[in-house]
Image (cartoon, rainbow, N blue to C red; front, side):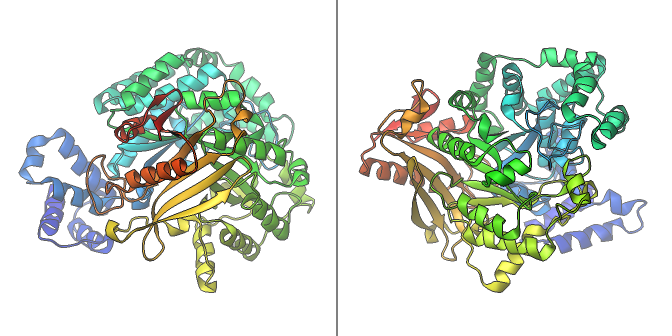
Length: 603
C-alpha cells in the first residue's frame, strides 16, 4: 500500500495528471501476483489508508515529503464520488426513530422498522438502523465515511428526515438536534469514545441494531400490515410502545433548549460547522409556533410534502393536506426567511400525464406558491400500501417510461431560473418497487432528451458549475425579479459566459402589512428585508482557503452587499439574514449583529 501511495505521489509531484483509468491501470499492475490483490489495492482502500497515516503515523507521513499543495492534489485525485460535495457543502442525513403518523396516504410505505414513508433498504435508513436511530451515531458514521472518501467536511448541511417533525415530542426534537451538533463539535477521539459508550448503552438496554435480528423481530407485524389486518400505528403500539427496552431508551432521549444552544455556541468555531439545517414536515403542520421553534433549533430550510395541488387527487390518495394548506405554509415559511423545498409526486392515483403537467405549472407560476427547490419524482408501487389494491383492480397503473420522461421534460422546461429541481427519484431499492420506475439514472435520461430536442432549461441544478473550475473574473452578476403574494423576490446569481451558475442569493422584500400574518410574537418588523439563502458553488473547499472553485473569491460578500443596496433603494431600513449556526461568524464579519432569531444589519 505504501509503495502505491508513493508512486502516485511521485507522479503528481512530477506534474502528471492521473485520471480514473490511469489509476485503475496502476492499481491492477500492483495487484498482479498478490493474493487477493484486486481487493487489497482497490481505489477505495488507498485514500483511507493515506488519511490514517496522515492522522496517526506522523513519522511515516513525514517520510513521504508531502507539502500542503501535494496533499490537496492527492486527496482530490483519489476522491470517491466527487459530486457528493460539488455544491460546496457536505450533506449529512439523519433519520428520526419510528413513530406513529397522523396521516395515512394510500401510496405511503408502511415499513414498521422505519418512520412511516421510509424503507429500511434506503441508504440513510440503513445507516440509521445500524446506529439505533441515534443522531450522534448517525452523524459520526457519515462523517467517517465522507472523510475516508476524501471529502472536506468543514461545512455541513444537516438534513433531518422521518416524516412529520411536529408529530414527535418537543423534548425529543431538541435532543435529536442537540446531538447532531454535538457529533460535529466533538473531536475525532471524543467521537470514537462516545460512540463506543452509546452503542454499549443501547446494547445494555436490550435494543438491537443488527438488520437480520430486526427483520426477525418485526416480520410478523409487517406481514399483518401488508395484508391489511392492522395499520402502521397499531403495529407501532405493539412493537415499540410495549417494549420495555424502547421505553427506557425513549426516557433518556430528551433535552432542553439551553443545552442545545450550548452546542450551537461551540459549533460557531468547530471543525465541522453547520451551514444549513433542514427539517421535513407536512404543510398542514406549519404554524407560526412551529417556525419559531425551528429557528430556535437552527433550522434554515423546510421540506414540505405537498405532492399535488389538485384537491381531488389529494383526497383520492388519502392526503389530508389541501392546496390552501400548501399555499399558507409556503407563505409563512418565506416570511420567516426559510428556504422552501417541496416534494411533488407524479402519477398519483387519479392523475394523468396531462393533469400532472398542469399541476406542476401551478406550482411554478402561481404567486402564492413558487418554492425555492423541488423534489420531483414518480409514484412507485411498494408492498404493504393501499395502492396495491388499486393496481390489482386496474384503477392505477404506472406511466410508461416514455410518458414519465415526457412529463418530466415538460416540468423541467417550465421550472424558473430561481428554482432548483433537486432530484427525480427516491432512494427506494429496485427490489422494493413492485411496479413503476426502477431506473436510478432517470434524471440523466430526462436531460438527454432535453439536450436532443434543444429545449431551454433554466432551473438551477441543470446550470450548476458542479466540479468545474471557474475564473471569477469572467463571472457576471445578474438579477431575476419575481412576485409572490407576500413578498417581492430578488434572485441574484453569478453566471459564467456559458450560463453556468457559480453562486446565488435569495432576497425577500416583504409587502407592506405582510408581516402581520406572523402575529403578535412575530420576530420581524415592518421595514425589514430578509436574505433567505447565500450559496457559492465549487468543491467543498476548506474554510478560509483559496482554490480554483468559485468559493473564497469574495462572491458571497458581493452578493450580500448588492442585496443590501437593493433593499435600501426600496426603502427598507434593516436587513435580516437567516444564518445557520456555523455561518454566524461570516455574517458578523460583514457587519451583521445578533437580533433574536436572526442576524441583522442597519441599512
